[in-house]
Picture (cartoon, rainbow, N blue to C red):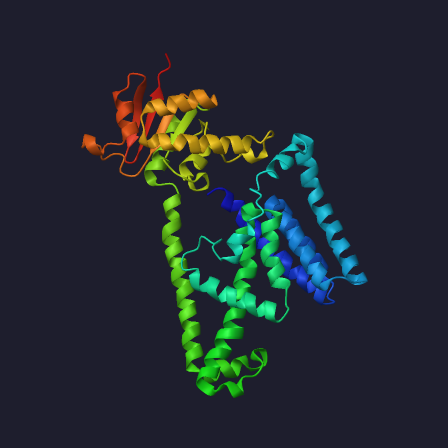
Length: 388
C-alpha cells in the first residue's frame, strides 16, 4: 500500500524519539536534547498521524520521569527545536493550501470510546502467529500491574484515545515489551523453579544468566519462541503480497495509461470488502493516469467530511461485482459519479468458457450494447461506457 511508504518512517522516528526522550529525562547527557529534536522533527515531517501519537507518548514519559525544573526546561527546548526545524515546511504548505487540509485529516481517525477493547484482548494486530505473543503480553501486563509499574500500561492504552485509526501500530510497541516482561519475569523463573526448586528463586534481573545457563528448559523455551516468531514473519510475508498488485493488474493499468485519454473517469470493481486493502483502487490513479471515481485514498485532506462519503460510496459499489451492470449504473446515478470506463479485476476472471461459472457482471457487460470491451488479459478487463 502507498501509505506504508511514509508510515514506516513515521514509526521509525517515533520509536527513536521515545528512546531519546526517555534518555533525556533519565540521564544528564545533553546530546539527547539534540537527538530528540532531530528524531522528533523526523516524525513531524514524515507522518502527521505518528507525530500526534509521539506528542502524547512523550507527554507520558515526561509525567513519569521529567517532572522537575530540568525536565520542564529540556522539554521546552525540544519543543522549540522541533518547531524551528519543521516551521519552513508548514509555512510553505499552509501558504499554499491553508490549515483546512489538516483539519479535514484530523476527522478521519474513526474515534470510538471502545477502541481500547481491541487492545486488552490482544486482537489489534494483523500479524500471523501472534497468539503466543499476546498471551505473554497479558502475563507481562499482570506483572506490571502487580509491581505497580504503570508506564507501559499507560503507553499501551493512550494511542487508542488519541487516534484509534492507527492505535494498533503504536500500542504494539508497549505490547511486545510487555510480552518480553511476561517471558523473562514469569516464564523463565517458573521454568527454573520447576527444575531447581522454588526455594532458589531470586531476583530475575540479577540472576537471569544463572537461570538461563543452568536450566535447559529455558533454552528450549527461548529457542521455541524465536522460531515461533520467525515462522510468523514468514507466514505474514506470504499473506501480504495477496493485497498487492498482480501482474495482470499492472498490465491493465499500463495499457490504460498508454491507450486511454488521461484523466478519463473509471469505475474500479474488485469485489474487495475493505478499502484499505484494495490495491487496485489505490494505485490506479497513479499508474493508470486516470481518475478512479470510487477510490478513497487522498480524500482525507478535503473538507466537508468528503472522506466518509467516499468510503460509503466505495462500499456501496463493490457488491456490484456479483450483479449486472445495472447495479453500477444505479450506483453512478445515486452518487453522481458519472464514468467513461469500467475496470474489473478478479481472480479467474478469464476462465469464462463455462457460462454457469462466468462472473455475472462480466457476462452482462459482454451482452450489453452500451459497453464495449477494449481490453482483457488474464484477470483484468476494461470496458468503454458508450454514453447515449
